[in-house]
Image (cartoon, rainbow, N blue to C red; front, side, top):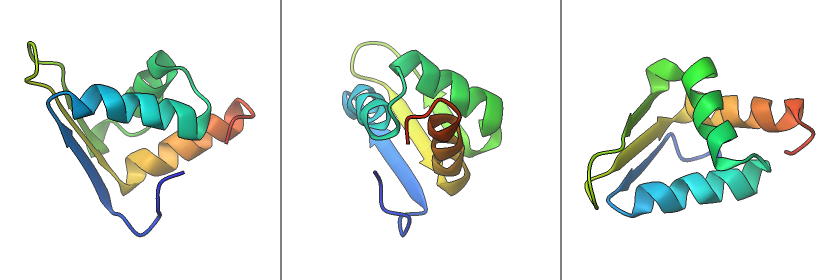
Amino acid sequence: MPSSASAVHVAEDGEAVGSLRRFSEWFRLTPAAVVSCLRERAAEGVILDAGRGRRRLLVVDARGLEALCECGADTGGA
């Protein structure tokens, strides 16, 4: 699970996909559920730009990480 001391998680290029996979593992959610959770519960705290090729960006603030914890708990994951 990510450290609560980190206020913002930023990933660029191929790291965005890796970050989704890590969030999926940490919170025991599918990658699609991670994206849905962030969109539904923390849309203001998340920037997700799929871009093309390696031009991808994922920014998640502390509220986004809290939302993922909540979604994980709701599904019995985290």
